[in-house]
Image (cartoon, rainbow, N blue to C red; front, side, top):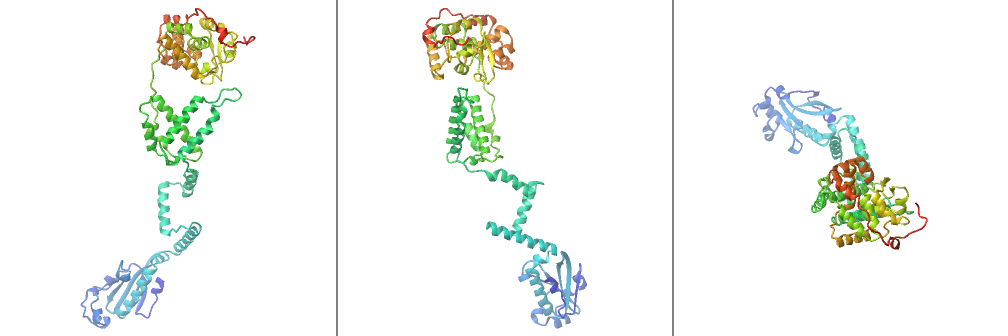
Length: 483
């Protein structure tokens, strides 16, 4: 089109040039007197006599000048620039009159304005642009979304800058694997689904110990239900770091251990949500400051003394007495005693067998039966079944009543702490004490070393029974029990 404008239209002269400087060629004629012979003969009218040269032509009188008319001694020259095959070139035509130059100039300017974009493209660029428009047209037909070529190019350039070398296709694939597959799930519904899916972990099958403690699973259920209640009408994918900080900040009155337990539980739930595609894998919620674990409060080890142990053993009824003896003189945990059967007490001579199904860490160990423990357990030699068959609640109630009757203060894990403390004081052997108690030598050294003297330890392990009566009337016996 622009090339068409360069064709000779019965003018004085027409030629392409490159980098021509026509004002210099005019030799100052652009500033010549308006009533010169050229003006009189060439302009042909009062209006044309008022033209100032060089005359710059703009499309509709606005914008950048697209062509220029210069006055020459022998007429008028129209000059413009255009691209041919992607390269800029200069064009000019000579006319005998200004009116002829002006008419042609207006046509050239109109053509340049209408096809300015096309004029600036090479043939290859034009082909690419048309192909890109076809792609966008197909996108519109498939998705109903209109995108112009300029917007598409701008979005691509911005994405490429942010991806830093990764291709746009690779980024989309990664997005599809993460964000794009997230399902919107109500937080309370997700908690209910999570809890329901864990119920079997606290169920005992074929008489075997369940994988998780029912008490622990009850804690998980309660904590997560409170977590969901804190954010009603929220989907899992709505959660942000601010939500987590707000939630954990509400537990300032609890111990550091209790707060850490809740952090672990919520983390476990959110990992499950990510596996279920309720939360994107790159959620970064764990970076919330509220998730930062705290150093656990180290409570002072408190334990019963030899006189208190003797008093409890002497006054306990026949069902509670072996529980106290095994806790204080063998160091068994309460949960281990609740799982312990009489067969475990007598299976290995001189030892109490804490099997994998009984031990806290599911690691079997053998605890030595000291002479005074053997004396307390001797009346139960033919007993069978569970050492304490009535459950944790009944045990705590019976034990609390005994302490209250004897005016002995409650000490958390006081029987086990007493055993470990006095065993360490008696033998001065961290490894032996750890093996008996089911702890690590480091734990023994850090928490139990030096808490008691050997004299106090001797008194603890000398709490002999004074009398034991009526045991056979309370404990179920079975002749021929395992020896």
